[in-house]
Length: 326
Image 1 (spheres, rainbow, N blue to C red):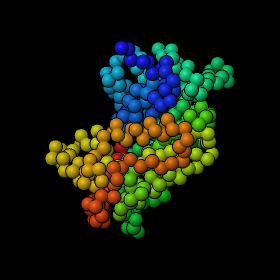
Image 2: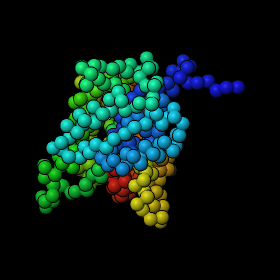
Image 3: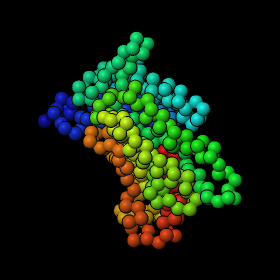
Image 4: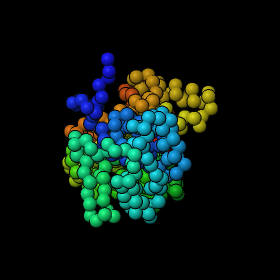
């Protein structure tokens, strides 16, 4: 008995991302790479971006090895763009969006943008400005938040330090929102999903800057949800996730850190990137979710083991360090 082809069936769920165009900024490792895999499996054409060309190429090669069939490889591309320089941030984002909406980046994919359910359209303002608009933007890029105490003796804490340290975490998402209407399909089927973390909800001493940045993203998506409607905007806040950052640890240290994380959740486990990736997929597929803070943290601090403030501080400080680079 043959297996039905999802693209020819009237399925109400798994076809929602088929033939869509998804830009993943920070999608070369960790959670972002897992979201890239999920989007690809759901039929989307994916554009990976990161600050380093070698990371982009490595991620593309990994995806090609995982999904060697041409029906998948023809839907994978990417290019490096460094969004960490505040002085060039806006122009770099425009260049990235121009690339991501170029009609020529998927030359071997003849099916892209033929699904009428995606509301994907091409716009032409002269032959040199033709675009294939994006359906979704996933943003998981960021740097580890600095652990700086709020004190008169903290000489490194200045307004300039804060704004520069939050270029990737806050200002880049803001600039993406600024240009969303010009580069995205203007329908409820389109979405932008950013990434915060547990410190925004549970800050501990020394993590005020990280908490500020994470909380700012909550305000940003609520504002964007109103101003960009019907394009949707949401933010996912992961808990402890075992990504490539754990590879920096020795065997025993890695075991000890995982055990500490495990005991800090009601589920008694550390997440895999594929677990949290489902939150981003949901934000893309649910055309009625917008302006939401989506937690995927395993029930952090709901555990009885995490009722102690000292215990919570220890776990959250470790989360801070391990969730900064995605």
